[in-house]
Length: 182
Image 1 (cartoon, rainbow, N blue to C red):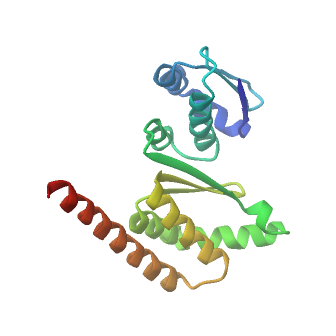
Image 2 (cartoon, rainbow, N blue to C red):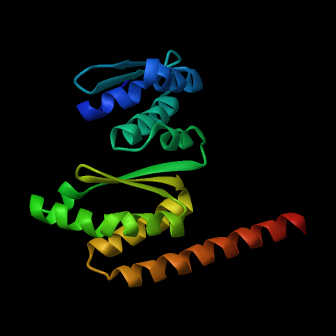
Image 3 (spheres, rainbow, N blue to C red):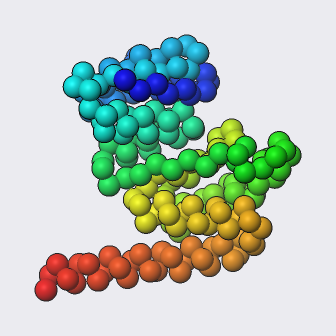
């Protein structure tokens, strides 16, 4: 059994309208979720399958850290990954956390939107955390971009880095297709 703590204001989102989100997770993974009003979520796999519990834990964490259930459900596929960065662990003051969250989000969400568009990963800034969902290459590219922003790189430099990374990913995918066809 796994235990996950999510923010109280995300409990209703995890349960969903008429329990649909919770039931969807339970059906897909054949697990039992017990969601407490305090944000404690117990994940129990009747078969005691630790791998399944770990995957469900990522879905629950993703919803808890601000992702819409539809985006978190991408994690149903083994091809998708979830990564979480806690800004509270990186910076000493709330003021620094807020400033760096602002750099990642950008004016009217423009920076976050560009990171998503250029990397292909979904990015969510919630509380003191930044979450990523996507294919491994997409998550790594988005994470690199956020790391660069947190280290003080300019937005234009980060967007160029993302464009180069996206081109490289597309070239690698094209090479894979050529090898499969040959």
